[in-house]
Length: 321
Image (cartoon, rainbow, N blue to C red; front, side, top):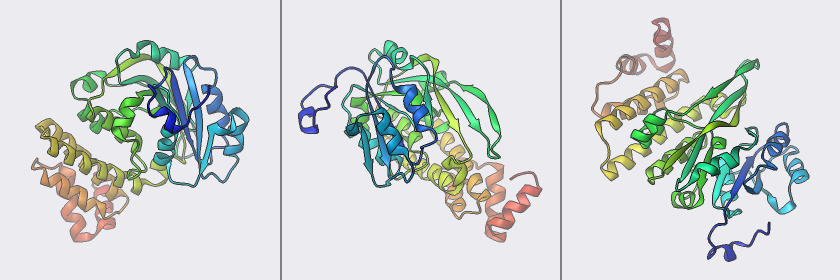
């Protein structure tokens, strides 16, 4: 397929089919398998790898599978910037963001397109595989989606507990452009926020009932490797969502309860990390006006009195880590 320059594409409707965007950073060990899972899929119109400043063989591996202009190299700016570059370099009607260590199952793109209709997002189940924090192999586990919660209040469900790996989601381009791309200010949980932003923009989600992606879990996952960044992202995301709901006038009691749970979880995580963000999370939950969890009511004064390390140690001894 010829890839017209951006100035030509501006006035063209997006052609049918799916563009698969693979952001890549030092994924030389897994990239070939990821590419092989995508190449040859019925419905695949474009496939690009955006190499985010890798220092290994990733770009060379990608060039063995793809034309040179479909391997886009640049300095390391993070996965959000890499995905956004991939959006700009493709033009198909649908976008699928596949991480460089994850896999697509055979025929999944065609199965998703078959049910897409007027949908904005097509979501399927996925399977987790990989290793735990000790490097031991994990048994594969299928993960479904809480569709009743998603249909009742998609924004609240995603802010609360509905998370889907990007490889199991198909986004219509016009929605992606309305959102404005992935957020670089949330480096760890940008994928969850992007799904929330889709719901916030009124996206219609439809299910494709099959396992369409395999999500690899490793000890090097950013949420495991840098838990402080992860929990700070969770807290920052919650504050931003709260502001959006307040601005729109949709901060309902149920959504307030969801935010309180989010701030409580972020606070627990930040306390375990002995990070000062714990106090911000505690204050955010308290300002919403609902009764705080027993953990927060005990942990906050203890942390102020004894310090974060001592408070966490004492709570662990009490069975309330």
